[in-house]
Length: 151
Image (tube, rainbow, N blue to C red; front, side):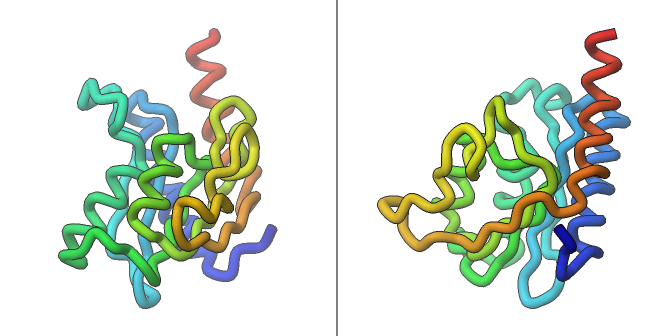
């Protein structure tokens, strides 16, 4: 799928590359508000010894600080990998309006692959979701990481 704002998904890919360099699962995320990137993050689980230090959660926390508001309505999250259940919950709780992600995650994905928390109206307003954006580049980073681990 072509991305209407490739510079934003490119920024998330750059973050994923930083994660890869740091020995983390290469996932990167950026939050965009009013056409500007207001926060960037990549996975820091290993660095922090914190299972919750996913790129999406960190990007949401930083965006909330920038806007001085936990409600991130009118924000878009660009992320290289489909959000897991934890990240999906954070996205829905923060009321992000749009999520654009690169590659689906059939093992843990909660925005359509394994579960679909993105469209559950019981969780409040439903974000627009765009999947498969620059999928090959996002998948390649994951393949590099997991091929190193699996030898």
